[in-house]
Amino acid sequence: QVQLVESGGGLVQAGGSLRLSCAAYGSSRSRKAMGWYRQVPGKQREWVASITSINSTLYGDSVKGRFTISRDNIKNMVYLQMNGLKPEDAAVYYCYDYYSSTWGQGTQVTVSS
Image (cartoon, rainbow, N blue to C red; front, side, top):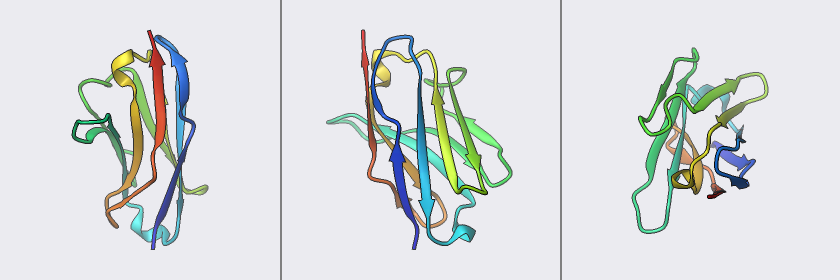
């Protein structure tokens, strides 16, 4: 069973940066591909970025060039470096394990204009 715990959210001014972390606990063989998603109240959860076990990365159009997803397989961590934050980036950010279909509890990101 996989458990995901996000951290690193907070309040930041527009143009600032945050680094989100996702700690993965449980069977390591399940963490072949990981992703970050975000959700604001009243809207569907939105895909942000994904990374495979060989570090291939994909990004949503709205974050491409500003966000970077990375992983540390030894530490069982996945990160999301967010630069140039905009008010529209404010959301609860969730970590996701594609193999086990497991979500983390989310971490809140607030961006002030």
